[in-house]
Image (tube, rainbow, N blue to C red):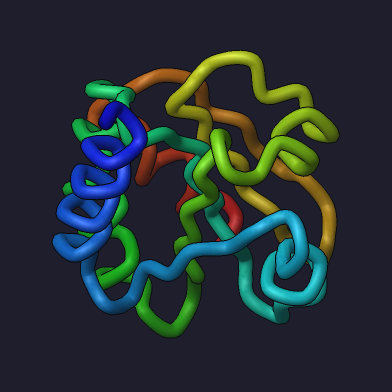
Length: 124
């Protein structure tokens, strides 16, 4: 029953994402993030994480505002343990900004939209 509820919550929350934000997995991370020509902001999150839901409006704003300059991706840490472990993600939400295949910035916690945008804008 618990898994059924988690799946339902996951579908409900994923359905609300802006179309400019897509999901990435352990299998697609290299191609979609590291080899991307644009800077990529990856949100490491989980369905049960309330602070993770708090940053969604900021991510949607960034995805829309910087549409042709920045990609925004989300990675569910419960479903994809390899990449978060590889990059030392210990708490969520964690936002990692990649540019040219390299990690450029790390943001941990549900920070205000202005702080996230300030950090990301330095690399656009």
